[in-house]
Length: 597
Image (cartoon, rainbow, N blue to C red):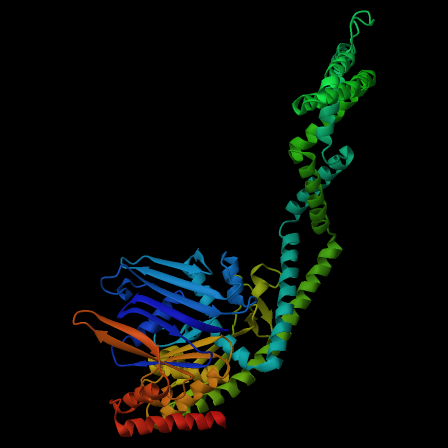
């Protein structure tokens, strides 16, 4: 799963550019003002961020960002695209267009979609870490997910066990509330369902019966008319006198036979006449078959007033039933099936209600017990992860910083006015009591709130990481967290400003750690440090040119001598400096040695 290609058109200073990305570590470099940040801005648009008309290149009517993503068909992002009507069979195509007047359009898998869908798809694909893009740290739930990911098999097993107990508790509670909310309403409903089912059972309709009865009623009502019509047609066909029954003239069959005989002698001499003879013979066959059929029909027509009365009575029964429960017998039968199922669900005895209440209480205690164990595992994991992330920060120019992860119960204060602590009440569905008597509020993910905290300096109070760190520090904290907690949780990571304020040996450590993350995920880094860029699997350079009035930028992959020159520029400010070139080669050689090791 990788972001394979990004195309940018009329975005900021970039007139048109295409970035071909590698699966591992991709670095994007370039001189100040060349448009490196436009790449990150374009990615933000592709991931559903709010559109800004100011991003559209001056003089252009719109900016377009397109991304191609290799992703398996069973990946959550692919499934979300298919739910939106898009095609994800051969990977994903994501497109975002921003008009100069500010209107924005999105497309996922070749299908127009709301920008919110683009954002939902993006969250499964890319985590962007920059000063304004820390959605994983702004969202408290993401703090918990990062911690749970780092907890390993034991925490995952406990979380699954808790989720199962929670679902069972909620189902039992919902049924208990439904059955006990209003005993009077339930009693009335039971009575109504029973009456309806008894009426339907008494009539006992069959599928399509109303149509067959309607046809039979028509036949019986017009029986004499039907018999006379068939008899008259038969007599006309065979040539009999309708009054006496004696033959009055030749039959239709004999006339057709004579006509066929007249043609037979000459038909051998002309194909068209032969075809006419064939048609005439077919008419004779049909007339010969039709006569007996008409006679049989006339003889079979039955005039039965008693049967007609019975059919009318049955139709009246069905009409009453259809008026109450459905337009035809099929909806009536469906209503009966549904009513029987509902009656079976709500027609319970007091003993059953008592047993259900006991089951709800048992499951509530079970959620509290498993939730407490889940909390213990999370706190153990939090202590370990805090130490490991702090150690990582020491290699990322944040040696004085300390990271801690706070895992706290959602406490509930008891009041006399009702606060949801009643296990039988509707609000009680989120409240459990622990073994020590503490009342806490539960959710489907546990009993805890999780917050990642940062103390930037010794003696400084630990605060939520999003409030305690600057843009560059926040990116490095996120890198450390991803390395310790979440390697591989999303296919692609994007880091912007991660190298702000970093230099020297710390820059080498930073590059090495980005490369370590890139071993399990695709990583895209915008950097101005040669020490970081030297670790790249693919090095892309944003270059600017000017025609005196309009500045444009393009993006190209650099390799070999061109890459050495770009690293030399980053290290010494001059691409052709011998010292800078030598330093660049040394960095590349060191990176190759590390990879080989």
